[in-house]
Image (cartoon, rainbow, N blue to C red; front, top):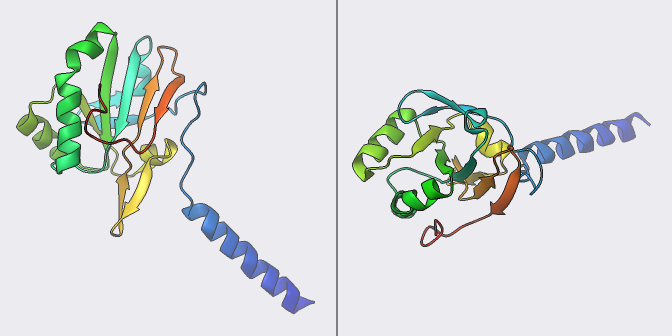
Length: 165
């Protein structure tokens, strides 16, 4: 009997470990967007609630200064006037530091905010956390959040080229 309980205990621990390592599911369309507060490339705090009443294009990307992420950021910058006309703000999130974001914005002339998720909590809350070569990075996903704070559209595993359009 005690051997059976020991085996059951091991199975429960293994199942718990597997569940803990499983990535979170992205929020579904129609649900409330997970709230967050992160530091921006400017060193200020930004929260989702700061953008209540306007559309938010929240895009997650793996790494500053990489070819795909640079192309994606440049395209969001290039389409900036279209977003303004639609009363939308673009926010980029990765696990990079505030300093990295600041340098990336300066180098690429980005005028929208990049948010630093070094603790990976926001990326995880949006089901946008991945592991690559032993590092935790933000996965390339985008969420359109309506003015009431609900998820209006979800784009998973996007390609950098043409995604902004």
